[in-house]
Length: 108
Image (cartoon, rainbow, N blue to C red; front, side):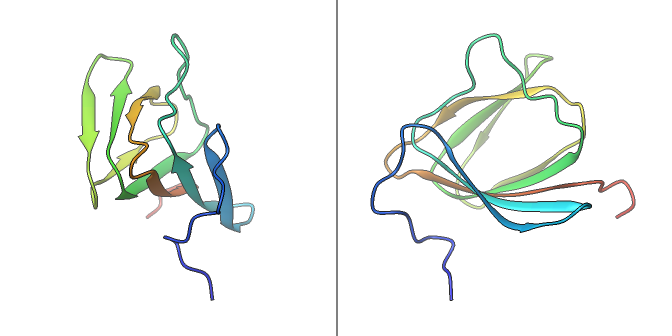
């Protein structure tokens, strides 16, 4: 049995993306962040909707319109496809543990 809170003994310098379930319609992944942010001037512009929950740590997401959302443990949000966003901050102690679900959620 796996546990979402079990971290590898050594974390890489980059964010760690682990696919938990994937098929043509959905991707469920665990993301571990240890202080990483989106590089300046870059934005995520995803083809699929994303629902994400922060299970550990703290983070700040920003949208292209200038708004920001501070996330703490248990906070979740829905990001529609093609809504440009970026990660402005992730805590390193403790590391952020995210659970993200990507897919077409317009039919949900």
